[in-house]
Image 1 (cartoon, rainbow, N blue to C red):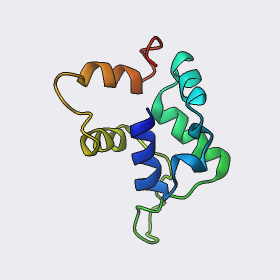
Image 2 (cartoon, helix red, strand yellow):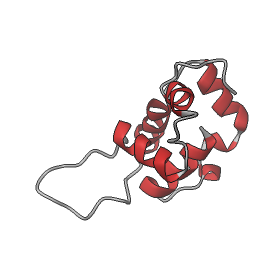
Image 3 (cartoon, rainbow, N blue to C red):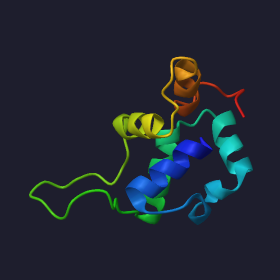
Length: 103
């Protein structure tokens, strides 16, 4: 979670992990134990603090969502090296909130 959060926050919102409650590892552990997906956790922050994505080009005719999605998670996994065969299923389950025994 920590690696992916760092990448997602920097890439999409120009934030560091220290700018969020996730700077505390225990907060991450509590989210994992509660079965909260990584996507839901980030999107909760986006909605709570009205974060604006900084990775999207200026204004357009259609309104773009500020939320992240599964494609953003997959891209972050690839960029951080967490897309390997050996750990694909484990990382996938953790990010989806289906692996509460992970720390």
